[in-house]
Image 1 (cartoon, rainbow, N blue to C red):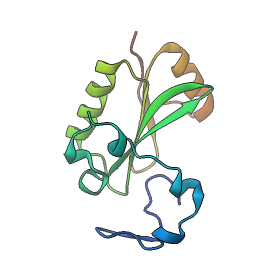
Image 2 (cartoon, helix red, strand yellow):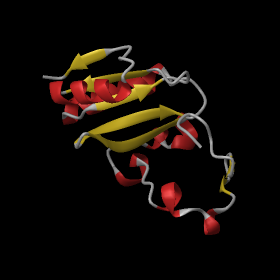
Image 3 (tube, rainbow, N blue to C red):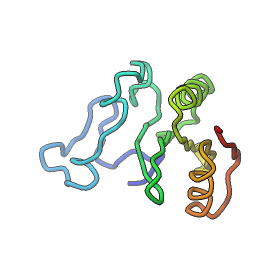
Length: 128
């Protein structure tokens, strides 16, 4: 399992085929933001949008990550994500299906995520 590729145990449209016996990490502890943040609209449910939103940390700095689940991220979804993050002052990272990352946030976050990714972004911007 890795970002952008469905788990081998997923039944598309049906859910996890090993739900009762799923491993603790990452399955039982994972919390998709769509499930826990009521400000995220229904159309961003992963099965509808083909993206997963996750809260992550790098060097102790929180950010929200948007990952595709096998298809390119639709521009309307990416636009919503960036505007939603800017309105809330969030650090953001998004990937395309080729796993190229772009990010937006505070200077501290930009430095930390740049060092972590080591390849540099497609888009780098600060929100300050």
